Every structure is written in structure tokens, then in C-alpha cells.
Image (cartoon, rainbow, N blue to C red; front, side):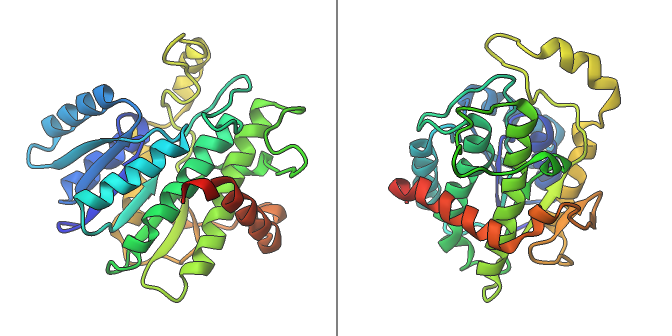
Length: 280
């Protein structure tokens, strides 16, 4: 990976940071895309302590705001001439209904739409590279998901499981339809289930809300390093199936019919495209 340029969203903590550390160790230049430059710079110093010869940079990107995503993509393309790996790692869980800067339900807005816009914005650069790859972090929670076009923002039926599950289903659908669009290019895409990992996901950094539940469940989770293993593997290997879903470094079947429904996935792609059209 010595000559690769890699973007990892949310790489200032958790799985993203662990992924950045190992990919940096393998020689790639890693851009930490995060919504706090302060936390990003702190993470960079910690990464350099572990990987003294690592090449890490920090850029501001708030997936909660499509304008910020657009600005990040433009700034990245001014700084770099190529992009080999885009790891759409960042994710949120909100324990009550919240909205993004553009009014989308936050879990769908951040976990999917922000990454959808980011990928679309950077794709022209990626298809020019030699076998570039988009790696989308999903999870087994996709089994809880469904998408109701009559209530896309969950104004009337919010629950944490429903909202998080549909955002992870969205990651799978996005991967499936992106794979179809990339099949005649040198680029490809995969989805990853990192497992149940002990990170700060679901903890409100401003209020601490959710911290007690997180600490209670921590012993039952894997570490961030274990959760990063499959993302690192997929970033470095040539042996992947375009559009595949991976867990513990192996391709796995998608176990819900809706999640592998190409027609529903394409409808959702078109809806997503409409939602970001003012920012592309």
C-alpha cells in the first residue's frame, strides 16, 4: 500500500482510528476525515507515536452537513491527484430522533447520505486510479432495516433499532448498486460488517448521554482493532468480489431478501440521488 492515498471517515477514534493505524503502518498516506480538527490532530499524534514513519493528515468533514461534505471533496481534489481507497467508516447512533443540517433523520443522513455524496463527489478521481476501492461499513443490523418512502425522515415512527437498521441496510443497497455502476471500470466496492465493537458509537460527546449503557455492555464487545481487521484486509487484498459483503475477512451471504433486492436498492439509489442533487 506504499503509494496509495486513502481517506477514512471518522478515523479520529474507534474502528476508523485502528484502521488508519494499520493502513498507515503498511505505507499508505491516510487522510483522517472528521468533524473535529482538534480530535483529529490528537488522533494523528497518537497514530504517529505508534507508527513513527506514518503519513497521516487531518481534514475537516462533517457528514451531518452536505455542504461540508461537498467542501471536503473539493478541497481533497485540490490537494491530491489520486485516491485509491475510500473507507466510509464513520457512523452515529442517536437514542432519540435527531436531524442533520439539511433536515434528514440523522442516522440515515450521516451513515448513508453523507457518504453517498462523498463517494459520488470523489468517484471521478477514483475511476482514474489503478483498481480503486470504496469500502462501506455496514453491520448485521441491516436485518432490522426497511425504507418507507412515505416516511423517509421517520417523523411518525422513530425507533433506534429501526433507524439504525435502515441506515445499515442503506449501506448494503448503496454497495450493491455502486458495484453495478463500476463493473466496467477498474474500480470496485465492498461492504463490511465489523462485528459488535466497543467504541463510543451512541454516546453523546456533549452530554455524555448513553455512556452508562455503553460501559455496561463493553465486556461483550470486540476491540476496535479486531473490528478494523476486515476493513484493513479489504483495503490491501486484490482478492475481492465487487459488491460483496464481508465479515471476519470472508465473503458472507446477505440473509434478508430485502437487502439483496436489486429493484428496491435501485429505487433507494434514485431517492438518495434526489436528496443530494443540490450538492453535486
